Length: 187
Image (spheres, rainbow, N blue to C red):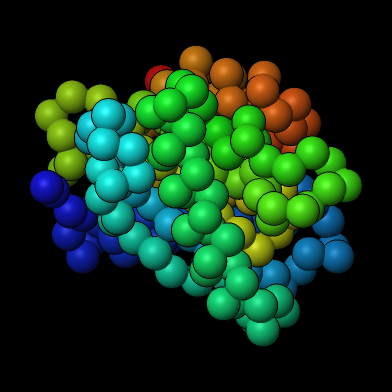
């Protein structure tokens, strides 16, 4: 198993800070000062399900406005990751949006905000490889937009077709707008 070195983890964290700023700017003033809990995983073997996830970074990104809910966001981001990894193996899912609670019904506390994309990360694999990114702390549309932008800003060039398929499933207009703005960072 390969892990990002400290320099690459720092670069990923910096990319996540930039992604959060971009998402908060798009969400509006009501979200100023908020933070988000990020989890990034290498997913080299889909058949292993969530057991095959190799965590690369897990940390709080951003401001203090909502960090009183840090424990909740930490757990929710983990749940999204595990659920997506399991549903990827069993159902071919590429986004936690596909298995979230229906709008207005949070009886299982399952939210959107985790994505699975093929990315180019030479430090982890010589060929393009699967990266699962999960986040919690903003609205579902904000969390999902953040998980799409972070690998893009890290220079990992997620496949544009993966991003497009994720957005077709979620119909997340905020993430679509931000993806179009930064589409040159995808491959």
